[in-house]
Image (cartoon, rainbow, N blue to C red; front, side, top):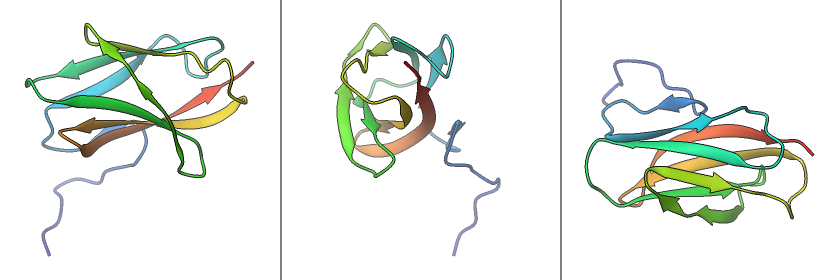
Length: 100
């Protein structure tokens, strides 16, 4: 079995050898909206999805000009996971906290 050359955490890490990632623009925890900057080194199909802690996908975010915005007004305050997919493969996950 092949081993990765470095340890990888699920949260706030970009997996080794991928060509895209995202970061929060602003604060985390956040109140009204979460702004995400997308860094894609190659021209591929990228999507961002938001999950609750039960693992249920609750929203797919629209990406425009290398940015995405999530405004969870109808959601409960709490912890969510934002996951980036590149060509339908999971690439990066980040824990975010929504406070009201």
